[in-house]
Length: 148
Image (cartoon, rainbow, N blue to C red; front, side, top):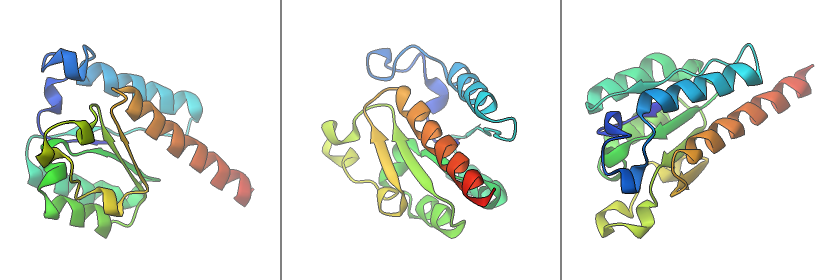
């Protein structure tokens, strides 16, 4: 799970838009959700305000993941390099946004990530992360049962 710029401010940044849950609380709940689903399911989280650090993380760890949940923050609308890194690791991606980017300023309506993602969840608050994780948990369970 990657969180882009300014997501470290969850819980304090514009709580009327982003809610009161901190990034630390969100990450902990997602790790718990993954471990409850399967002892083999490890949810790794990473946040950076730096595009290169996000790209390095994707390149270093992305190929070994069953999928990537990405909230690139403002980089959603501007980072070809981040989009290319996600595409290069060839893992399924679900793009998540706490707010509905399509109901906000016009510059937020375009996502460079959406064309390479399996799907996008926007506007459901932090519940969007849980839905994305649930998708990957169920996808892995189905994959494991088909190979058993």
